Image 1: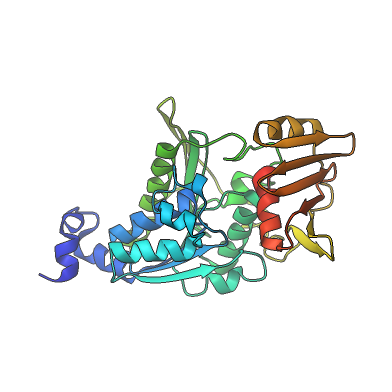
Image 2: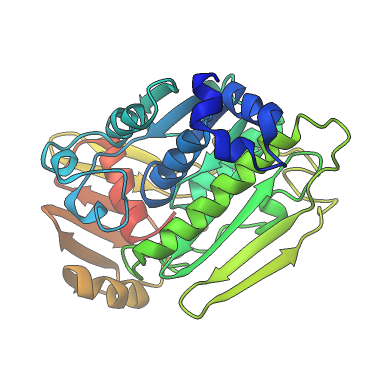
Length: 345
């Protein structure tokens, strides 16, 4: 019996996988974008299933408040400010040293996403903001790559396999991103750790199904299904979706996020230890609502023209048109992270 047959014998015994499916998993090349709560759990599930190559992409480092819901990381990672991609690779290698791991510390943007996804078979969404999800959708539709969307806030989540030319895409589901500060985030609404594991495992399962079913050329394409979970109340629903013929992305093949027309621009302010964050023209922020949501998390000063929020050594000043100044850093990646964390994408 080979190492693979011995290690994965119970998974091989599951008929829909079998030895052929296990070989498909071993040959698969998977990219996970975002290695926070969802992404780190997805990566662990797929490595334990025997996926042969994993590209691990994240821009951040491990922080103490990650640990309640990001089970792959340790207190040591947080104390040493380990980057998530490198820490994940170290822990995953300890789980299965035969897995080829490609950790990349990068902020995913329209300028690098094609390169980041080069050579992969399927993409997993471990992100927590809409701008990157629309960018992933544009890139995957343009490149013909399947991807698995997932998201969670509180104990409510959703997951969906998106296969270009066969299923509805993310813009069929949400033609436009919710306005900033309307959808909530894990920082303002919270997130329940056990619920994260459910959504991430569902995403990993969708990826495994897609990978192993490629062995059967006659297998029908999976339908467009959005699985929606209210885990606190034990409710699970499946919503059948249809491709929108006039969808800007998969219908008309317009890719504004991939082309950079909807990217969040940042500019380092010389000599001010600050970064200005610009958002698409037409964005409007309801300042009073933003101030109310931020007050439990730090010091807030509200004026008719802006909201100033201080937390964790940085100060964020947000204007009604969405523009913001992030004081306390000259790092564009960190400034974008702060903006997306507290205002939205």
